[in-house]
Length: 369
Image (cartoon, rainbow, N blue to C red; front, side, top):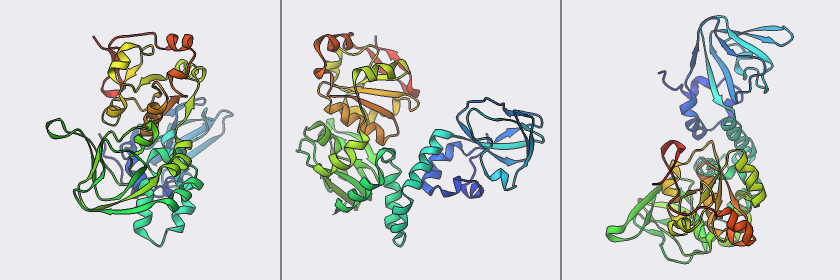
């Protein structure tokens, strides 16, 4: 298998040339050239594959539906742009010589480009301070910021309070009342639940990570402790600013009717209540990932699928959607939770009982025995 290309080899490609180093790292797994043999078809007119193609080597023939032809040579100005980008495709593309192409997931590329262009002005304002730009890029490349308007980000940056911490310092303590959330600006931190022999490390946080928001969204005590692994800096955002600037645009809520339409399109119920609550009654074929374990278990979910989170009041499901958005998943919360539904609708929704369904690696689900 070919090695991924170095971003420097792709700097001539438009609009890839505006991506940041962090964004290139996100695309790395896709930066593998795909070989084409002379005469091999790449795509036909009407093709609906959501891929963005670039010609890297060799020569292609593009033929439109009305018979017009264009010979495309790698290295030419025309080859620096995507091949027949409109969907459905308007051309047939066939290799005239042995060739290679780059195929990128269009949805991922569009997300990265949208973010980069939307925040370009803000990054330019900070351009004199390389450290600030680097941190802000890492922060904004958190997928949840794809939903946050630039005006909210500007307001948030003005309200953040800087806190310098030494290695071993506790940023927040399990069981405490939550009145703010935090962003890790530099250094390393870990998320821990429990104490002594029952202690469990849930995650190590990266620069730009948001944490502490679950207590705000669920209106409950902190469910984990965050400790600095090395000297670093965190930025504190007060409760009211979090709700106004981040929660509102990030947490998408749906009614039961809207959820039904999403289910018909392939979405999956995700029950974020405790296992005992789930076993008592849960939605048909729903997965159970209790909120306190979601950060640890989310890797088992399928990023190509939409998840509909629910709980009793809507608070835990809002927390789940916020967390899943950070991790790059598409998720919605059932508005106000199942307790807000009329009894008939609630009973119809929570129609199964018992151990139900489990998530397995690769996004697979299976019935628990």
